[in-house]
Image (cartoon, rainbow, N blue to C red; front, side):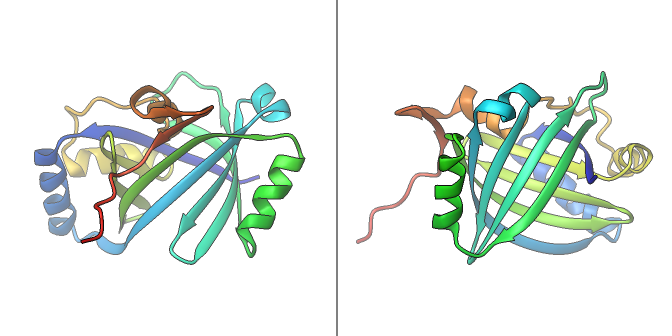
Length: 185
C-alpha cells in the first residue's frame, strides 16, 4: 500500500519569492512546472471511507488517483494513494459515472516542483491562493521546515478539494475553482 505523507502551508507572494530563493540557496533541484486540471469524484464507498477518485490532466497525460486519508492528530497528512496513467480519459470518466460516482469538485493549479534532499517541495498557485507542500517522511519534513526557515508558517489542514468548496463557485452540483480565461482578440 502506498502512503503519501505531506504537510501543506498557505503562503503569500512575498513568502513564495523567499522560499523559491531559499530552495536555490540550498541546492534544491527544480524538476518541473505544469498546469493541472483536477476532477474529483465522490459517492457510495468513497464517502464511507473519506476517499476520492481524482482524474488529473497534465498536458497530454491523465492520471487516475485513489486517495484515502488516514486519521491522525498531526498537521502532517497521511493518505493511502494509488495512481495510474489513463489512456482514454472519456472512457474512464464514463466508467467512474457507471460505478455510481459523481463529479463533485474541479480545480486548476499551476505547480512548480523541486527535489530537495529526500523531500519533494511544491509551490502551487490556485485561483484562490498560493500554497507550499512538503512531501517526505515526518523527520524529512521537519528537517526541510528548519532548513527552509518556515517556522512561522501556519499549516493548512484542508486539501484543495475542501478549499475549492470554500473559495470556489458552485456550478450546478460541482464546486469549481478555475483561472479566468482571457478572451481571444
